[in-house]
Image (cartoon, rainbow, N blue to C red; front, side, top):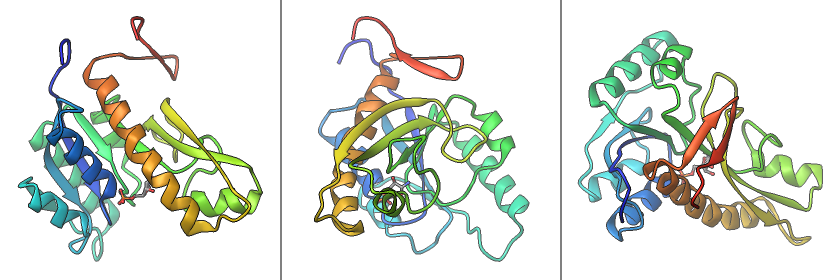
Length: 207
Ligand code: GRF
């Protein structure tokens, strides 16, 4: 793959880790040049940790429970800074990052969210879409800023909502789209094709 930079990726997780797995698989099968160098979890029992260790990726657990938020945030910031990633992927990471963290890694943090933002930010995005009765939803990869799911959008993929859908059937279809969209976004970033200006992104010419 010409003109592409191998990014050191840190992935932050709290749970299942299917998006982490999608990155690991994409790295293995050559869809992306970048590689996950560290996985950080705020949950000791996150199934994502097994996926990381199966792929021989070092993991750091920084428990968020039983400590004050500012203590957790400063431990996390220090640990991620020590790793020096080029890109930080929030893949089901269930904590809001501190503004210190966001300013330290400005423009280098991305998140995957299961709706077409700005619709349905926050928790239970799939449930929100079903409750609103929309016919189309999707997923979004965006840069992370200080707001909740508000940063500049990099890529979105749409998915039809069927009359027969419930939360689990729709979430399962969306998850496939999430994995594909996240890998496409990482590919664009490693090729330096995402231009960020005025709180929006555009793709560099030549795509
Ligand atoms: C995904 O739906 C993602 O969009 C959301 O949290 C879920 C994480 O799933 N932010 P997984 O842990 O990657 O399987």
